[in-house]
Image (cartoon, rainbow, N blue to C red; front, side, top):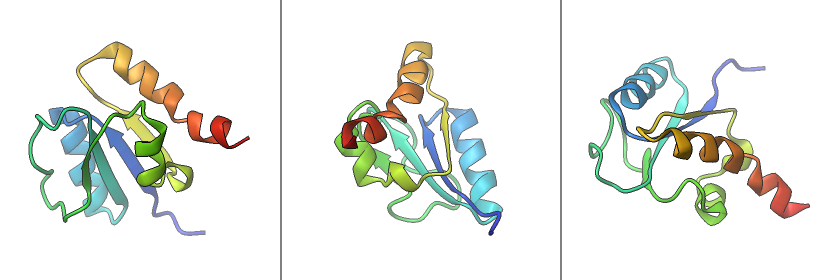
Length: 98
């Protein structure tokens, strides 16, 4: 089993972008989901498609970015309530499909 992972980071705070760049440098597949699109255009070393603008609470957005095959999700927005809700939303695609 490969140690490389598919990682989703919700938010574009300095912490989120630092983690994204570091994990990408390690070879992981990283996507940053930015709710309002007001954050930086991309993280250092990003390629097209690695930053998605969309609502992390919208299951259609989660499906579009492949949440079902994501190994790790980090919620790192500036809003504690959104971070908590995004963590719960991570489980929604599984609940909706049942």
